[in-house]
Length: 601
Image (cartoon, rainbow, N blue to C red; front, side, top):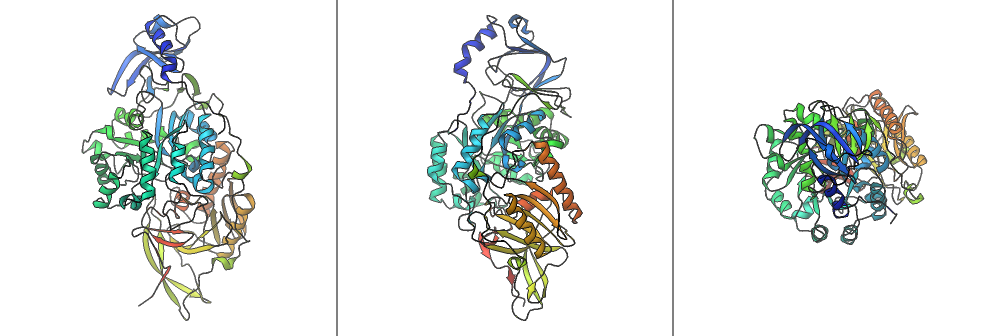
């Protein structure tokens, strides 16, 4: 394992903290004259100072002059609010299309000082080695990045093929690593409900290590299967989309994680469990799940989520609890972070407004890391090996013929099972459409276009074809990505088979990423050379290319909000209702492969 850094523990620095709090030694830093936002008591306390030593809070007092020396760095709060650094309870760094270092550089100016990341995207491509690379780079950063060991690669065994598989032995090994905080989202919820030995072995290894098991229950069924899933050990869930989901999770002792990502808008529909039903807010947590680089650069990160929760009617102090102390408590870190109180890591934001939440100064581990939107520290990079950069193996150059769908002999029209995209939500709809046949081949028709998954890990040349509705594409075009949650084969959506082949071959040429072709011309390209998932370029560079990609989607007729996220999830065979994998079309309501074409009566 690469040499990494970990933050000194409380026992290592306790004598220094005590000496500063008692006034026997001067603090390293004092933030003077601010409004202390106490998330333990849900209070705002004017005219307080924060004394910091060894990267931790030594004391919070009305006047820290008694522990301020000539070498103490003094920061004038000037009556601004002093709030804890924000925590993202569930997210995937790879969704930002950035490495951990570049992701950290993007979020620090937005006030996020702690993230809990599940690198199951890279686990599907590179296995345990990929998780180790992410973990090691995470520990090099100036903020707190805790890694959850991925649980489900593949996410649905037998229904998809991954580049590598994660085993219970892998999970047990990872639990000994310094930055592993628990088990990543347990997406194989049918397996847990059925007491699958492999899934239970992973959960047991995590619980024996005294760490948290992440949940992912994507079914709308809140009956016996849900009860069985919760009994299996997952401690949280972020897949809820309505108030009933949030309430059901909290009532069974789970933490209900409400997400606002680039495309997932699930806070507004669930936060009424707190704002209207008045349930105890300690059991509710805010998170992002998936944010691409454009959102991070232009809109924000957890500050965006907190502002949104407030706009949905949540009390600002409650929203802050959901993004700080609630998260820390859930992961067993309440004594380590999540509040501005003695002994905790000195992660502090200065802001002049609790509702609009401008992030004016960010302190992480006792040093200034960002001010007025500009980062002030370095984010070290890991030396990614060549094996992580050469991961697209198609087996052969693709042609239009690879995307042909043959109709039954003599048919003029066919009835097809079609994936229906739902704007701003992860679930899809299982639709059917009558499609025309020309020269023996089934064609898309207006709203319905083709979708395909091209196997890219083992070079088998296998192509699985289907149909999708909801993007609104027009003209001869294709969009291709090697980001295809969670198995991350190459996913192709298009209105023309020749364009689909052209775009797919282009991504193989550059080693992965996203591209859009129209009438033989490449409209946008986002190169993602690391595992076909991430770029090690600066976030601003990736965001600019992502914006061109989004504009190219619009130019091709797509008006959905952040449609790229929907595109990237169409192969995720653990979220209902209908998905496509390298094995074929998958009905996630029954977890069975179904035929693409149905007989017409």
